[in-house]
Each structure stands twice: as structure tokens, then as C-alpha cells.
Image (cartoon, rainbow, N blue to C red; front, side):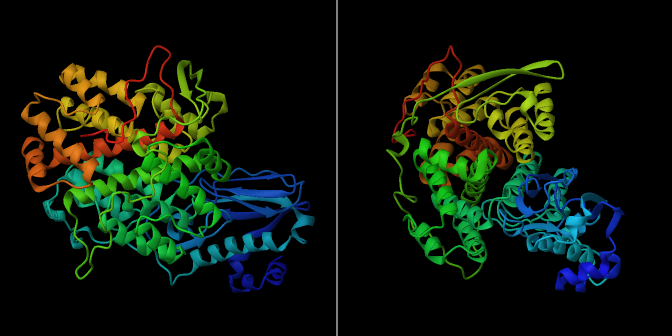
Length: 564
């Protein structure tokens, strides 16, 4: 069998004999392949295709219609930074897994008919070669796992938020740094010096961001286009600088990057990229998504990947807000590339005055999880019953039912239970455990919902704002797009900060100083994270056209300038 394996594909000759011995006969009728668990989450054979499916990847490989089905347990979320193995199975080019993470786990057996194994096609041999080469790589003594950087050697950057040193950090801040260094990023550049001011929510936020950046299974060129579109929309110079380079490294045509930089619609985009571009452009410039654009994205990528595209843009919207508030510095000698534009992305529809497109078709479904009844509601994302969910979705639902419920954007984010659970955890912290008074936090959320025209979010939090001490007349003024009169000093400081950030993408020195004097550094970060989190929630809800309850009426008009 070892000789046969080496004969079938020349690259197999490079693998040690011990590695090839993992491909062995177990019965006269079946060839068993021992593959390291973690490369793929599950495998299933149907008709004439073996579909090897990860959390984010499906890749067809020719095989026998008689092959048995093997189920491989899911890989853990955390992927330490180490020697990286690029696995490119079909729909997710350049999906990166860490060899030290993958091969530390036990092997799992897949069984295919022996007779077929000797006549397996070229595509299957390519897939086997990946597994064999990976095993050989893992067994090579000259490639030890890369250690996480020493946190005391870390040099953070910042402007308004002065860089922190590891030895000066609190235990909670050190935990966040340790998680960053052990994760896919392997560092803490960008917004993390700011997020360290509120490390509990900062750590949850960076974990969600890591899932969106590294573990969605979206093509890397498409992911990077979404990121630079979001950075362009926010005129986030450092974000643009960092991810323009990443976009070019991942094969994005320089002409496409240049067009996005100058606020033009790129010509000649590949079809899969154009579908994603249309979705994010409409959502960021009109706060809505047309039926045709949503259908094209769902048909091309599936519901889970649509949620991931929105989540990716939502995360980098928060990143851009944090960087801009800090005035995060570019590397020495680098000049800012983005120019102020009235329309940083080509405006769709009537801009922010665009109303909900198409006929709405709200659906409500009641179900139960372990004896507890819950309700799921949606429109474009049809609500799931408990029985329709995958085990991972059921686990996420069990947690939600036992905590704050399955309302709001839960029916949407559960499409990706990995990133969705992290988003849910982050939201729990934002909703219930921030350092700022509830009145100021709810004012921030109301302003965010008003800016996005998110009807469901507005109705939920306008009530919470009044309960927290914001007067009815101030809430009504915000709903109508007017500046409230008679605000207290702390209300005015927060109102000016959040509205200026959404309108201008920046925070002036006077506005920043005023809100810092009211809330402190940690409080400023909590306000930005609250706005960024509920911006992502609003993006999910508007893409879905999340319906109001039967006894509710929309209160927000769609205004070209929702925040004065």
C-alpha cells in the first residue's frame, strides 16, 4: 500500500514511510484513512461526491457512491500562531490552519471501498496528498511550534490612548493580551491598545473579530475587499493602510483597490466579489439591502456566509471607530491615502432616506429547547425550529434560552454558531456589564438605532432609555432627527460624541475631552463599543428586515440626515 501510494502521486514520495503507513487496510473491503482531526470538521459521502466539510469550507472530491459516512468532531475555536499550513479546499482559498494546533489532536478514521481506492481519481489523490504531506510536516523535527511572543517585549501604539506596557497592566488586561498573542493575530496592533481600557468587553470583542477575520471560510480576496470597503466608508487611515496591503497579497486587482480608495465602483470585479461588494455597498450607504442583492448573495454564498460578510463589516466598523477616536498613528514615513469624500462609497438608492425595500414576509416560529419554549422571528432569514438546527446551533440556543432569550438578531447570528456565540457573549457584556451609567449607554444605543433606521432596535431601547432616566421629550427629538433641548452635561457630552463620530467619522479634541471628563478612558471605550456593537446588530436586522411585533408600529422615518 505504501508503494502504491507513492506510485499514485509523486509528492507522496516526499512523505516518510511512517506517515504513509497511516493509510492502511482495515478490512478486505475498505481502505481506512487516518487523518488528523481538525483539518476538517465532518465528512459525508453522497451520490458520487465526497464532501469534506469544515466549519467554513465545502470541497467536492470524486469518490464512490458506496462509501461509508464518517463524522469528524469539530475543531476547537482557538488556533495558536505557529507554523502555518495553507489548506485550499475549493471554496475557501488560503484558509489557514496552524500545524501545531491541527496535529496535536487525535486522528479520525474515514472508510472508503478498497476497490475504489486503487482507482481513485486525480482530485481525490490531491486531497490525500494534502493529508499525507501535512502528517509528514507535523512529524518533521526541524519545524518546532512557534512560541507566542513574550508579552513584555510588546510595543503598543496610540495617540489619545497612551500605549500601555505589560508590567503596568491589570490582570484582566494581561489576560486579553495573552489571548491576542496566542491567537491567529500573534500581536496587538490596531485597536487593541484602546480596547485594553475595558479589557473584559475588549477580550470578547477581539475573539469575535478573530472569528470574522480568520474563520468564516469566505474567500480571502472577498474578505479583504469587504474590510477595505468598511475602512474607506469610515476613512480609517490605519485600517486602510493595513488591509490594502492584505488585499493585494490575497490577489485583489490593484485597480479594484484604487477604485475603492477614490470612492468609485470598481470595474471588472470577479462575479463572487461583485456579489459581496453589492451587499456591503448597499448596506453601508443606504442602511438597507434590496431583494435582488440579498438573493444574489444568499444564492452564491448561503445564509451563513451572508451573516459572516455582514459580521465582518460590522467588526471592522467598530475597529475603524476605535482607531479614529484614538487617532491611531500610521507607521513612520507613511502618508494617509484616503481623502475626505461626500460619498466614500457609491451611494445606493436614496442614501439613508431609503426605506425598507420589497414586500416584507415576517414569520414567527415557536419551539422548545429542553422543555423551555422560545420564539424565533425573521423575514429573509426564516426562523429555525430547534429540530431544524445543527448540534452547534442547538447548543447556542440552549445557552440563549437559559439567559437573555432568542429575540432580536439571534435568529440571524445563529446561522454561524461559532461567530454567533462570540457575538452573543459580547452583546451580553455590552447590554448588562458596562462601566458607564445605563442612561448614557442607552442614549448611545438609541442614537445608533436612529442613525441606522433600525426599527426593532429603536423600539426596544427607547423604552430602556426612558427607564434609565432619559426623558420622553429627548427620546422623541432623537426619533424625529432633532437635537434634544435641555440635556444635562453628561447627556450632552455623550450626544455630541456619538453623533459627531457617526456624521464625520472623527471626534474633535473638544468633543473627546468633554466625553472623557464625563466617562473616563474606560467609559469612552465602553461608549464606542456599545455604538459599534449595536451598529452590527442594526446591520443584521436591516438586512433581514426583522419584523416588529404584531402590536408595534414603526416610529422612525427614513431620513437623509438622521443625526443633526
